[in-house]
Length: 119
Image (tube, rainbow, N blue to C red; front, side):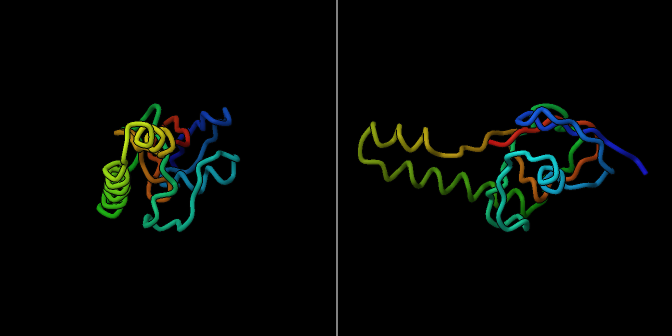
């Protein structure tokens, strides 16, 4: 069976796992701080960032893309409701803003070596 190494930068732990394992399954076992709730790709709480090796992870599925898009939309709607610059800045600092290297841990499978971290 093919194996891959995943490093969790937040806890500085590298593990070898079978190819096809989901990030959320590994993060639970190593004590990484990747939060999660539904494990189905609906809630978006398991966002994490890929620091290295994005090409060694599964491609984002349609449900994963939709959930991340909804997360962005929710953030933008909140920002639009800000009444002044101070409240807008406070919202921006408080939000868990997903960048281009963010994925959902419950949906992402490992196919090669990578380094990840919670948001």
